[in-house]
Image (cartoon, rainbow, N blue to C red):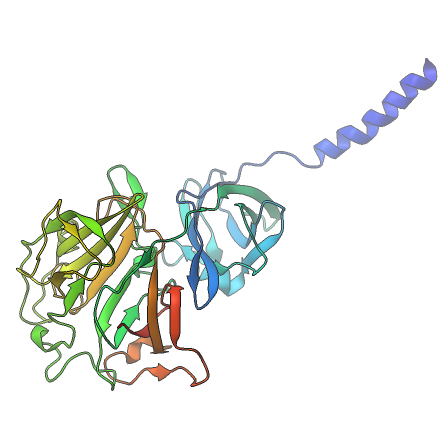
Length: 372
């Protein structure tokens, strides 16, 4: 009996300090509100989504690194330093990525999946720094990876060259703009592309670029990307004659004139900033892929004539989550590594040995596209 009690005493002597060495801490609540689904860009499957961090501690906490893990705890992606700082959506002027008590930030994540990865679910490991500079780790943000393939679409426009303008890095680009409407914050433009027509020199207009009608894309035929049913339309937003005279628009008018197509399977294609009086369809009407549905214009919240196109999970321009899509085929002619050169300089052509045809892909950031 004495030896048995001594054995128990030794066991507890080791167990109790082990638990005492890792006290509970209040830190971040980790949430992914929009589960990601892979999309192919430049021949590589990518995930694009957001991790929301809310600080429930009573002190500022600073994320130091973020690791994304699959269901087998393999690291799929890792971000720290400048790579992490550039993905944090938070108020400007915050030092050391510090998140005040009660505050939330959004981490915008985009990364390629390894060729052999068949991730079924994701989790996240956050290393963070407390106010006294001590380092700690918290795990969470578990989320399944979507299994549904993105819709394969036809061209929304004819010919080209068209600049596919989008980037995950722009602080106020579509990818990073949340709209809190109908009681929930969403990113409808997560995969949105703004299509701008160019000439062979990279100019967006002939003559005075301030005149809307001089834009190469103005009035271009806008096409149905699939056999679909028209879910919604709007055609009552006026258009200014010049870019400089374009007024500010309330959030409810940001889309300008638009058409929404019900693609089926809970997917809706949105065409925005359409030319007044150009809509050729009405809600409930069935359209075939390639049908002309409207013309490119300059209505709503726009910096110049272009077609805004995105796909979302509900029939609402702002009250829906943006979801991935791919085009059946297009030609990739080159790109603008510096988007500031758009309109004044030619794009950078891709090497001649780089295949230009893309099948079943989404155009990469600021790529120049030629449709059939």
